[in-house]
Length: 194
Image 1 (cartoon, one colour):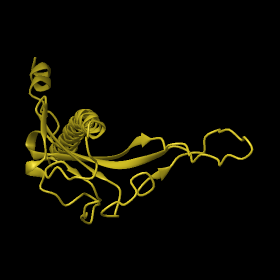
Image 2: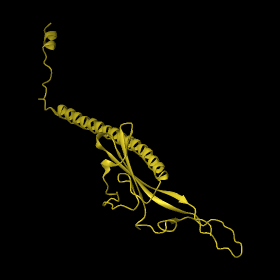
Image 3: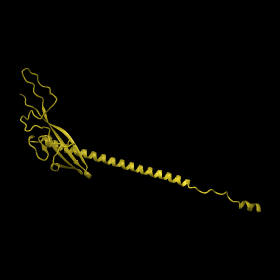
Image 4: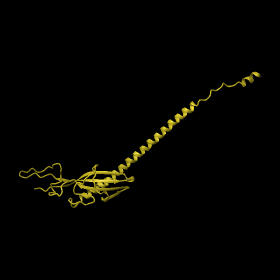
């Protein structure tokens, strides 16, 4: 019996003191995982912001189309292209700022509301001659020559000419974002035959 009790009282081998290496490795892995998760969350946030900005830009460009079409219809309906309207139309080219935008009072320009966007527009004739003495020959843009009659003894008729106008649209959106769009439009007239 004694032999059995000796076996039972045998002591387990002595353990070495713990050094905590495993805890350090686990803490380092956890910190790497936390940093990776934070960077992934940040990338997702940036992607969402970029998508939102792109969508807002597209909507503001669509709203600017409403302004361009409205301004073009107003230019076509002008009774006299020689007189300024004072708040949206000028018969000559206006001074521009460093970005090429006309220096006008935008607060007095006509305003349209498209959804949550405010659209203001102006139009100016691209002409620096004032006053015009020959409206059928001055400040016109010559178009591509037209096919005409070549009868002997008749002068060839000048091709139709057009007057060019620059339409500038300012779209103000939510959070005071601004989109500026400029386009050139033409309003044609045919010169009378001799």
